[in-house]
Image (cartoon, rainbow, N blue to C red):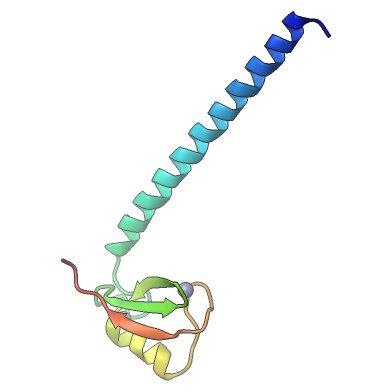
Length: 96
Ligand SMILES: [Zn+2]
Ligand SMILES: [Zn+2]
């Protein structure tokens, strides 16, 4: 291959990488907005109380239920309703 065709090839690669990165960044922003929107929804289980019971499993947690429902799940030894991981503890969330 001559020098001209090599330049074209490298240009093409750079453009493709930038496009991919751009798409990925947009997905992350959308996911974050989705999280904020879900936070305003009521408890997944009773559909009444606010989501203030954080279901902790390992180094992550799911905030989908109120403190009362989250405590009930833990008491009954039920898994996290979202990811089915074992619930290690339930902590109450206070918005600051
Ligand atoms: Zn509830
Ligand atoms: Zn979970």
